[in-house]
Length: 293
Image (cartoon, rainbow, N blue to C red; front, side, top):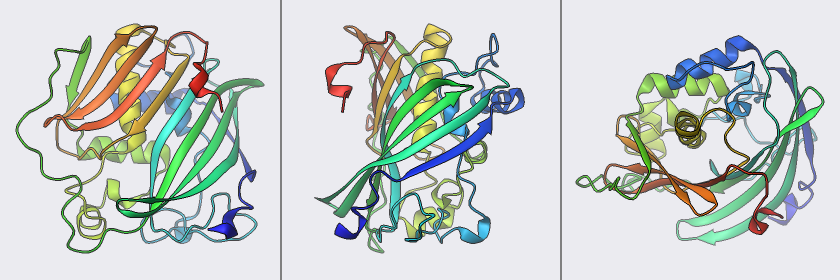
């Protein structure tokens, strides 16, 4: 992978406008209250400054085709499967309706690794989202590229067993079942054309999932929505989440929150108790040392 060493430091800039209509569609998708006091709910930065490749430039999986041209932002890694594995987000200022939005993105690092499922490459990308002239959100995303699953491999994840999620250790739990309209709307809002979220034959036959896959950032958004329902508007200063296992469309998803010392612990779980996503969050602005890079 030495040929990709020139990619760290590569930058991309995009612009957008945070319209009231777009935020209202976001809230309608999540079945939650609309914007309050002219501020968008936390997490709406994920629907801004989205990629805009033409349909003709998409690959067979629905992602933009990768090439090594000077215009390419992400490295053209040969591994065919890509997922958003984790993020560390700092909420520095609210996103205000009607304001111009600018995003500065930078490839931070590329790290090849050997995993149990084969070769992996982790790519870290930093995004800075400005609302007007003010830095509002800073995020470091971890993307992972991996080899394709062999045909005939068992479904990912394995079939669920009996109900095994225990809500008793949690302060708040919300259970919902992500259905096709929710996945469709989130794909539309984020301009995400990855076929595992809407093309059932592709998701099951080509990528080996048991059904349509719930977007990782949708699960993170639902956790942020749980925080909003429990703690109110603009409650968080930081959020860090890590995807652990795919959530499948049509299967119950348990969203959970509890206080853990001076921070919040969040989690999403399948009905059999399998962890889907783990997260920590803070309601004050001091970053723990482990978050500094």
